[in-house]
Length: 404
Ligand SMILES: Nc1ncnc2c1ncn2[C@@H]1O[C@H](COP(=O)(O)O)[C@@H](OP(=O)(O)O)[C@H]1O
Ligand SMILES: [Mg+2]
Ligand SMILES: [Mg+2]
Ligand SMILES: [Mg+2]
Image (cartoon, rainbow, N blue to C red; front, top):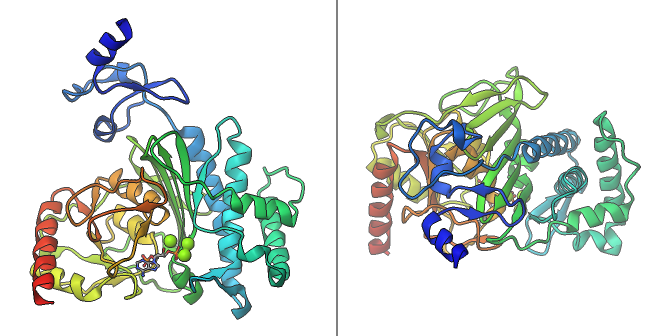
């Protein structure tokens, strides 16, 4: 009886099943930045929230995720430099999968599991070892194992014995989790923007952590993204220094540092309120997003600048530091978005002050398993501009539908 009564009184507080630490509803998390302890609160909690002993900190998870992504980026850079046609395999869905995809997934999976052993380990990742286990992939597998071992050894702190081919396959297959709304799940895209990677353009290693269905931390390693913020211009000169690591933890903002380890700096989304002064990002690949629809929306908003087309979640990273103001993504009919294509990017942008929603204005729901089932498209911008963008998107979608 006492338990029922206190539960009713407490309302939105609940006890985390793994840690038994009380923590607050997502709304309060998002709007009470930089607070580790509720006792130091000078803000008044929103009406639905109540005092709690502490806010969950994911510092250890974040440090490990940064290390894992940085090492995976090192592996990817090595492969991209020496990219040969034979690195590309054909998966049954015909999307290119490279030695680096598998190697990156093995490195991240191995490091997370080894360095955070006290947690029950769950990883939702894009790749699986199915094709690699085939007879004809023997040589490729050996190359991956060699790369993974060289990468782990290149980090002085990794005191590990050499991984066997089987260890590498096992690490890759740890990524088969279905995710969901209970407990913690890592979400990994070992190379997002495979097509950009193969072209020598932008790609990202994207790692997020879900806790009770919400993204609570995200890391984006973007090895080819220029370090210098360059409003609206992501194409860079050869002499520009490249390699960015974006990271965000719920309630603490978004930071960027160089992949080779400079001091992190806090980043914020663009404050542009005027749509016509905004610039917007979209996929490089027209097969991934309807360029004609975004151009219709841009026209409606009187956006003057041409679209900036780059691959991968590097778009979320660039947006989080104000390189552009809007990101729009409208896949062709029937395409189902996957959580690993947006989890890390989403928190990197929201912690930098942005908003990510579907075309109905709903936040993305990462709690339903491997897919993001959403209303048409994904749109991202700052809080001030979102209502205007949403209106233009909805009007354009209606016009497009009625013209069919
Ligand atoms: N037809 C399609 N429509 C929308 N997205 C697609 C797609 N085919 C593949 N993708 C996704 O688009 C991602 C790349 O995003 P972007 O277009 O922003 O560069 C791919 O990630 P991978 O490269 O990890 O497979 C893939 O998951
Ligand atoms: Mg893919
Ligand atoms: Mg991807
Ligand atoms: Mg990928």
